[in-house]
Length: 425
Image (cartoon, rainbow, N blue to C red):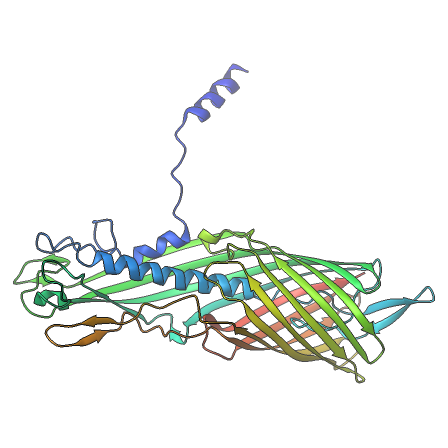
């Protein structure tokens, strides 16, 4: 017992480890060169000139961080989590179960049918994506131009002449996301389903940056190292981080309004709670709610559906939006279903994710410098989803799907691959 007591005392007395940097914090490493400890602090500059780019860098880096982090958070929160039901569904007529759907059902769209009283649906899917574009700009060619602060006593940007020096930073980022979602639905009564979706998110970000000072004249007081006769005007930096944890948990309530053999209508309420760690890019950091109407029909083996609704987001830098889904599922054989969807989201109002505007110079002549090649635009999304469901002899559905973004909005991959398992009982 004495040994255990001594061990506990030593553990309590040991210093706690320093908190690790979050993924958000690590983004600033892409703009930190040398050992100064601040973004774009020029250690090798002449005395008094090493900190002249820090104000512009801090402002632009904050805007960049907001854009990158919130674009990635939006991509995480917008990752489709799968339909609330799948496979054969039932309703009870005269105490006997009657099938209301016989195909495997949609993958990301919603059909009107509910599970039926007392029935369960469980599923899991894994979605993998490698982000390649940010508002149409390749992630390995994101460019930034950091300008000099306006120094006293002259209140004219560009005067003295060295204020025209610009530091260009080319950033290449490798951003990957792996989302494993566990879904469970239960038929409370005929026509009412309650569903919960729990995502496990793994985010990894690697980046490299190359900074180059573009002097307006020689010799320049700004440099990373060296001397007036042999200045070092280029520097490199990098970052590498990852995080894994629970994402934003969703709770969904689906209510069937009418159902026949050929047509059905429902409403779906979806609340997503900020259970994911926003600082490590695992969640949105705020509540979002979705409500939309569902209509679906059946013409033999073909079952088309349409969804339309509204998304409310409580995050400070996230816009509300309208969402629409149009698609079908088709039982191409007794055990195989083809599913296709067009998924869209249309931003309401001016984007809250602002790109820094052009910097205006007055001397030696009026001109502007664009701080980045990322455009200012609304982030409207449109994607095409195509996949298959294969039913095994034991009734388990195997799901494969590919989702292709069709618009250059937000942070997007070329394709989102999804595989999963689903089971009704």
